Image 1: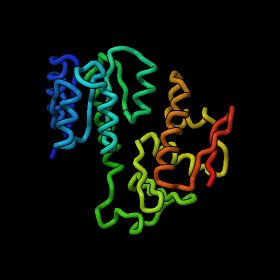
Image 2: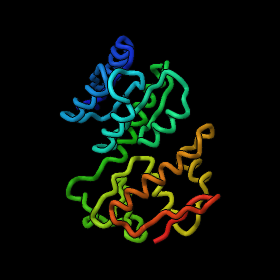
Image 3: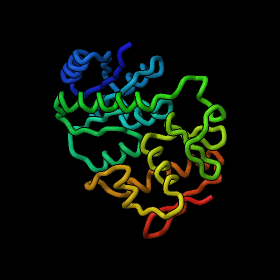
Length: 234
């Protein structure tokens, strides 16, 4: 079956044009008039990638993205009609994978779509007979946390932490560097690599990871080094 893409645009003509272009590239595409209708469809049939226009009718598209990310780590591309640092930061902290400013060229869009599907394929979970932590050997452990890179999963005991892609990368990096304090700047440049976005996004992501560790009753904590960054402790 072809990869299924759900899209919603503020401009109906642009939506249909994008649909035809993606279908010509071999993808199955469904267009929706609002983010609410898109999410309703997602509840009945999960897709493989979502493209949402921030200006499309319906609920705030970031709310839709957050709801989708609660159930799936599928890639999400957000389109915006204006440059907005606030929207960019909010989007990536909500788990959005790609944030693009309209108008987006077809070739640029398809390049991002292809790259996201390649990444998703590389992160696919192994067959069911190898899924539980008891049946596979963790590649890295710290305190009560186990890292299974092959499945792109982090466990606390038998509980998998439901992390976004960005949260996973940040926590993995910190565990790989568990013996030292890590500055906000290093985390920011390593995970996001953006120089024109507020470094506040690092603190927001750490805050969400802390809550997920706490909800899983993990003994692992992320301590703040005031004026510098963070370090792990257990």
